[in-house]
Length: 146
Image (cartoon, one colour):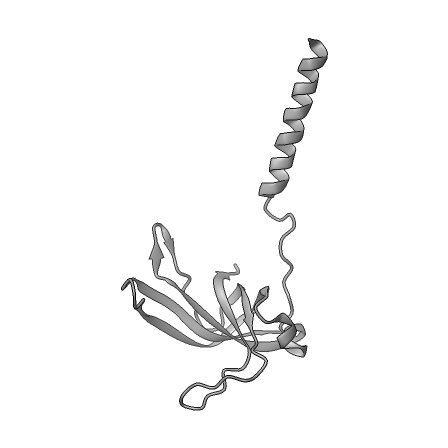
């Protein structure tokens, strides 16, 4: 009976430790920040892969509008993210408010962490007015750095 109780406690302990590892502790196994310059060396190798960048927002153009199907308000910005190794265009679009969560307002010269996927088509895509879209980050989160 005593051995069975000890075995049960050990099993529960191992299970709880495993769950803790799956959920993660803040700071453990965080995705590393990638330098912008390393992405620009061979952008097509990183096409559609999730990246995490840190830098300063410049040339910020704020966007506001509504989603076509749902008419929900959209917020966001298009800006250049610059770090010591290079500069890349970031496109950030989000619903203005989902419950208590609000979209991040990107401002000029704001230090931020951007998480999103790299958009680097094998051939350059142009807009109808002839602008080259080039490579860019399609951001799903922008977090200000204090």
